[in-house]
Length: 544
Image (tube, rainbow, N blue to C red; front, side, top):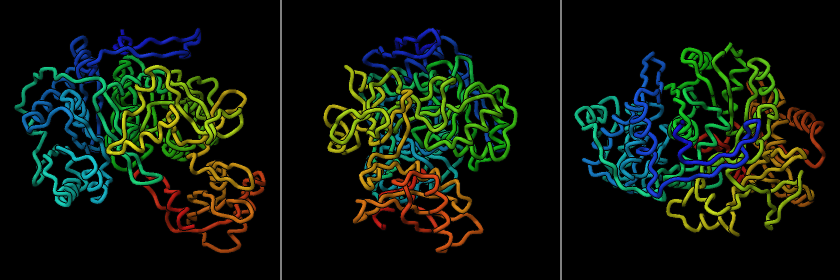
């Protein structure tokens, strides 16, 4: 029996579709002890992590290995003075040490703060000041130790510094430190309600917010792994994300291990479709998850046979119907889109392969009560745009939805106003019960009495060969309230001119309903973006 069954009750119909899902867990549930160590005890040789890198190195770790090395790291951390409640930043790219470190911190009751190696010094300064970290564990690559040293100096922090794989000035070499550390580690008393992990949001509409999840967070990802990713006991799941993003928690550890699947990790810097598919075929990956950008590259470069692959999922941005169509035609696998936030686990997905439709968020997860509501809090009718909200059902909202914002109770109360959780995302439901994303609720454009989601206009813009990248915003307009403006980066070979502006407008407006027509176009050399690559529409609007 898979270990996840010890913590939940699931109701499925005759077709295997999930109809209801509830969790049951002890007050002291801890993923490190109750999942990792328990699997290691019962099936020590069960495969947990398959790791390789671009240099051709390979490591395959069993659950007994994960237990051993996480215990060693936990002992090193504890001997350095790190304990329950301490915050520890992890900047470890896709290095296998991440899995040892994060499990070790869970066992200690410390709060892990995964972060990307792409952070600038100022990004690090902001996060260090906000979180008051006790320690940092980082890669020795990409000048991360040097940037961290500068950031720690700027903040006056005396955080303990660890790096992995090589010596770095001012840092303890954690790879060497665990060599002689004990493999035994007695259980630390932690509570399921204690803070376990914190992610900084991308800051699309302001400075990044620290999103804190408690120790029940891994359990909510059972639905993510089993019913969306289609990870299976004895299988091998491959989510492309780097460990600094919340998507790694979605697809590289918690739900997958709970349902008995090993995780595939390919440690790379520059995405190359041929290498990615080679990894899938060489190791026999059974389920795969990547953002639409990866699938676009795969389709463009030509998709090879991937006989081991049984399921493919995507999330993070809009999926073009043509990419969906070509991938499915080539592989026989529909791309199952999903939706959720850093603050939550999986909220909606295309759970049924037969009903999967490109561009749709799918249907709500049975784990959550979800509605679409207008700004006055009223439920909207099918076809009308509303905000995605989560309605608490007993204790369900406490699992999977974050427990607090770092140092910002006012913001937490704001998103939990009126007794429901406000995602800030806009969508509508069609006559078949499918949900369709329409952008951030604050990004909705009100023009001439109509509400327009920017993404539907952006999708049409991207069909024009001159448009390399675009973002659509609403700008003040005396006649319409707001006018639709397109900010465009041109493809190679095109230059800004009045004639091209008119051509793009005519091209798009012939395909759009009149109330969605583009009224203004601005050509730019680059877009203001967050560290995760999302366009900062607030900044575009402020300069409009």
